[in-house]
Length: 334
Image (tube, rainbow, N blue to C red):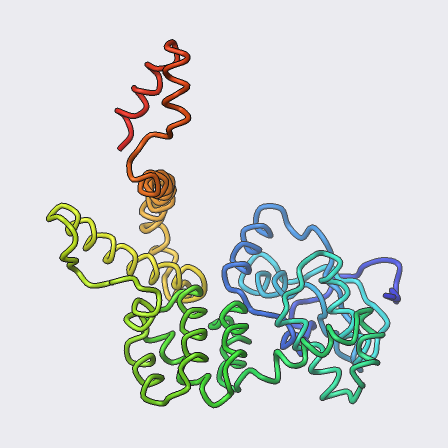
């Protein structure tokens, strides 16, 4: 239960607010940029939450607002509310405040649980009571952070590794995680590809097989799934092979773009870059949606071997007035 120390919020200078508890929150640059736009347009809509640690104010809720405000020249203060809490209570409040808003992430919960157990010396049962969760929930969160290697932990903390990727990495022995992490960066693997690689790694304990996976991850996945990623298939016609090659190229590029948009590279481009690139991203969003819809239609058509549903054929015979629209639809289909 939160205990507010004061009825009314107070204004604090940005330099007065510490971020020592920020290590329990994920840093997501794109969300911070969105907060900057919100602050510029509407100002601060809700107070941040702080505790008084000795003579210093420490933030426990509102890290995106603070980070965004520090990047804006027009803001030098934030409105804050103070709660009464010790070290353990502050960590529990971080979880409680974000859980109430539906904003907690599994890895952030794991950091808080890990700190309460390993730094504050609480038992798992005590942590469960403090956070209002079951002991098994605490056990799973603790295992998540403790099975993640040091390098992966560091990248996760600064937003270079996504929580989705972290959940896959912890399925591996700690000694293998660094190699897989390096491969993911080198090849620009998507989240789905990483999941497949981890599945394959766990099924191939022999070192020679694992070396092949590290050196040729996409080839290993294609062999496992029975999907040929080469540029030619002798079963296909010349026209079919042209599409086959185009699809391979497109899928590889989409995979790299997915990784970049999810958690890489955005901070490397400038404001001027964004202005120039915006029309192309608008076109990508529009064209990708169109291609996705047409691809789904093509999948259905391939599944039916190009045949029109037999039940609809009978319907056309029984109801001649409906036959013409169906024929028009068939002729217009790409």
